[in-house]
View (cartoon, helix red, strand yellow):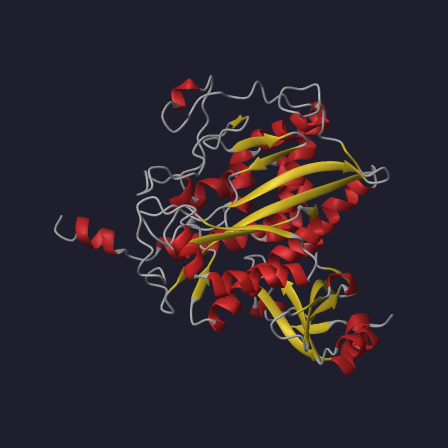
Length: 433
């Protein structure tokens, strides 16, 4: 069925044809339903240089070709449909466009009969419209996690988001107030990696839009407040047999419930962790979360070491149950498509090279990092992560040199822009030197 016919059935008047640039910013054009079939064939035109893509004003048009399978009807504005789009230029896919990068990585494992499934835990803050403080003045406990009163004070917004997830068939299963004042999390069922990335992209747009409707501002920024716990995007990872629909990561005989393949995949992520940070903790602000001092709640809940454990939240990787593991490194500034692609490339390198992660740690690394046999620390800042990424043959080869060069070039420019700013801290500590 054509999208125009689908629009008639659903009462859709307009489509948002949307793509994600390298920095994870959603870009879109609003297309009338009468024109959507032509746009599916030809693509909506964009000037690539006007967004965060590695292009110049001299480059030709970029064409965003929507994926009909990604259609989401906006629950709060049902006359609009959202479509994830793939970028094309000069008659071929743009190699460094994030959704194309993920699809290329997935095609390699699909050829081997594998499927990557992921689930994400997107934490976010609800702030005042100016973004300067948490929106709820009564949300002030030192340990506000799971605070019933603060959760129910935001019932109207949280319930509207959760109802929307249910309406869209995402199977939401819990909502909670998180560890920082003003911080929340809404969980839905895991799925195939491309679908999860599309959904995560839409989720961020939806949460921000509905927060604005309620007179609030939502942010997925990793660390908006110095003394409060930052927002992560814990990512659950498993590999499946595409034909049989069975997990390749499960082993009931293993103490943690993981197969040999799962341990090798996990070992690949540990092996490439420093380089992986450039993708999954991609902002200057990310390193205020993963290398943070103790917060008012008593713990940052963020990793500081490259390590893994069973059901122990102080490590970079946690195994909460059989058949999957959780990468706690990822934060809310990560591009949903790139984070899945980078995890997949690092993990499959581990499978190919049979990388041994060693035994899971039993220690609380917040209190006893020396308890790790060979402790490895995460990068101190984005520049260190980019240097590791540039030096990583695993990620550069796996994700493609065209993408790697484009991403590194734009991210280094972003770092230089940050480094050029004189901060209030510098003025306070060096003005009278």
